[in-house]
Structures are given as structure tokens and as C-alpha cells.
Length: 159
Image (cartoon, rainbow, N blue to C red; front, side, top):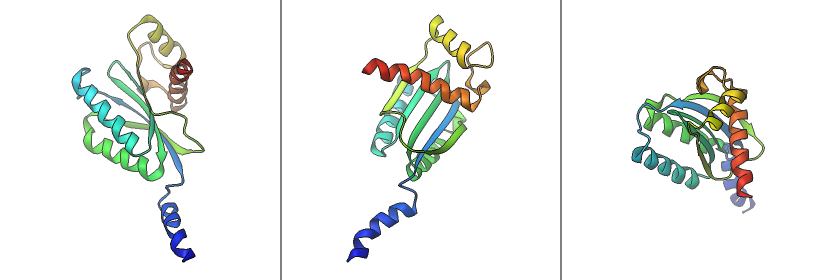
């Protein structure tokens, strides 16, 4: 009987459910408009991530997506396959993937960077390699720092 109770735990470990993964990607929005279609897509992914115990931080600006999501190895693999299958027109580029000790984000966080002088200067001065905001010109370290800085402000304002 002891082997029967330990079996489910062993099965979970066999597929990597005990390992947390962080995956960050950048993409250009060439398909969804910035209105109702985008809102529906974001709500769909919020629910999907919540149902699959995935947390996420997403920055949307000037048609670009920068997103980090964290969860178990199988959940992240399935989510990535789903993104590639359902949203092939956004051309996601993975910039970082690796194991983590704990989740950095809390829920499904979204930040729309505006064209305000403050947001633009902050992003350009601190993280961009060019004169315009373009995450494709940023290194993976710059992208991770950018996300951490953006959502540090969001998380601290909730406290």
C-alpha cells in the first residue's frame, strides 16, 4: 500500500512538475488591434494562466509585447506551444528561459506603457539600446531588468 500512495508523487516528479521555470519572450503585435480583440485575448490568457497555476508579467507598448511567465515545467511548455500555435502572427522570440527557486510575479500583471514623456524617457534611458523603444534591440539582461523595474513599481503601489 505504501507504494500506491507514493506513486502519484513519483509520477508528478517524472514530468518535472516540481521544477519551476521562468520564460521571457518579446513579440510584435501585428494581428490584434489595441481595442476589443486585444482585451479579449488578454482575458483569455489571464484565465488560462490562472487555471494552470502560471503567473505572468506583461508589458505592452507601441505594438510590442514583453512577457515573463512562471510555472511548472510542463505548464510552461504547454503554454508556449499554445502561444506558438494560436498566435503565430506575433512572432514571439524567447529571450530567456531557466529554472527558478520561486515565482517572482503575483497573478497576471499587465502594464501598458503610454507614449507619455515619463514612460518613454524611463524605458529609453534605462533599458533600450536605440533612440526608440524596441525590445528587439535589448539584451536579455536589459529585458529582465526592465520587467523587474516596471513591476516593482506596480507591486509596491499595491502595498
